[in-house]
Length: 173
Image (cartoon, rainbow, N blue to C red; front, side, top):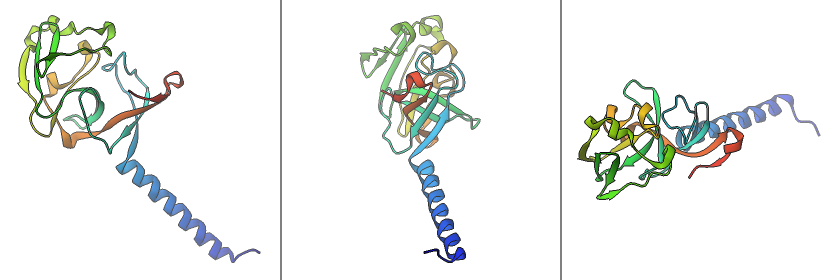
């Protein structure tokens, strides 16, 4: 009925090791939890929101991603342009591939920060293996307007789930 204590301890050690390897693998290659720092993504995400990133995903326009900035800090921003996209920023709007963007995630649904900063008006194409990202809180965001294009290799993952605050619990659209 009772096994040898040494044999039982070895079985438990194997179970714990296997569990640790599975957890490490999931975190390293599939999912990673993050905590939002700063207000650059308000009103979509607020300071201390707790999110889960998917590392196994294809990044598309308007996805929210977390990436390594040049100083190795982690930034969360919205993808506006993917490789090959043509972007024009002028006046108070962004034109993506010839079509004005509808950005309902912005506070008030508009984009008037570009009007306040006319030096940001420009036109360009997103190069291969790069993304053009902007914070939802355009007047308080260090994004591609400052950092330039974000390299694909610097992307940690796409935001897929919010688990705190609890009133916002669920999958992210």
